[in-house]
Image (tube, rainbow, N blue to C red; front, side, top):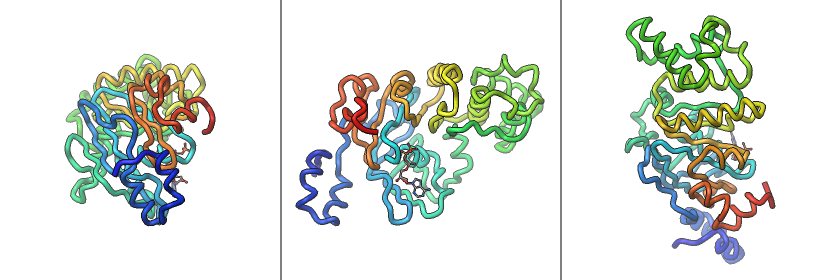
Length: 287
Ligand SMILES: Nc1ncnc2c1ncn2[C@@H]1O[C@H](COP(=O)(O)OP(=O)(O)OP(=O)(O)O)[C@@H](O)[C@H]1O
């Protein structure tokens, strides 16, 4: 049975909690959660922390060469869902993920799949820039070295340069590659983290509020970069800033209490939301 959240709310008084729990799985997301050319496909994803369910039957595609933003009030599950996409939740005790998440048609939760190379294919940039306590060069060279991606120092040098170039940082650091990454400004550190992610040839880049620790100028530079990166990668970004979602993404997904309420073209979500909860959020009535 397909029912909307509104209908669900009307029905709750008449249903037992067991019936309600089973109905929650068939709750429909408003809008088309599929992408024409998907890189990742997520179907009926549930996430629990112990006995508490944080994500309820979410289905969403991340398409090739698109930026998908995930928005919603604090605690709605955006980061939890994002972390499912490269199995970062594996590192959290008591966290359990069910459903199907595929990268290029392969189940990423398959027991035989090694999460270490997966996290190179699906890289992650965190809220707070977190360069290693090493030189700028080593920050970028570390991943390719442990994944055995280059055969010589010259090749590694080239990869470090091209990754810094793609992250828009090369010109600013080319004369001080041996200096500590932690000595860069916050915005530069975040671009260094992006270069580090790019260096191991990802297909998808996950970004969890990547600009929340940055000033408006550094934020604008990262937003421009995200738009450029889209030419080569699929990007999923969690953001608290609706303006940022509107600026950087082609599709937007609105989460509420662990449900994916609505997904659609970013322009449509912000100008003509179909669900009352989406409308309430984007018009500032809550969140
Ligand atoms: N490690 C954890 N252990 C237990 N519960 C957790 C853990 N991480 C998140 N949660 C819970 O899961 C739910 C979703 O949290 P999550 O951080 O994914 O939301 P969010 O939308 O990203 O929030 P925010 O915008 O505040 O970062 C919340 O109820 C939160 O308390």
